Length: 96
Image 1 (tube, rainbow, N blue to C red):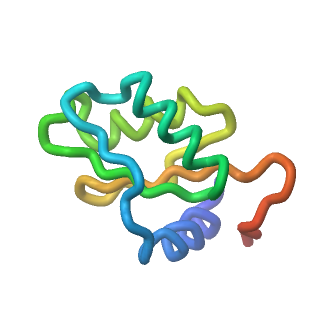
Image 2: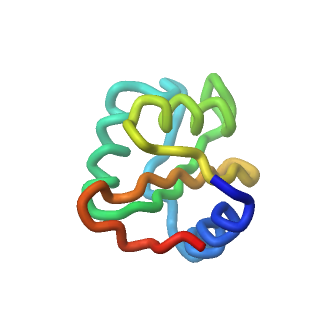
């Protein structure tokens, strides 16, 4: 993913509210399941990593993205991470 594409996705993710909160269990099975369900209806998901998460924001986001096929971490800012996975059938977000 190029820097232009990441910047475009960050711009689209800015107004989003975090859909998933990662806590003391880190990237648990429940967190991965919730992320997969979120990707059923959208392509861009904002994740909030709480202070007591074992891996920190970058590590938790990378662990979540690794468990979902085709997902990648777009950005990590503070305690928020943005994860993108294009819809395999009908992508709504057109990358530059």
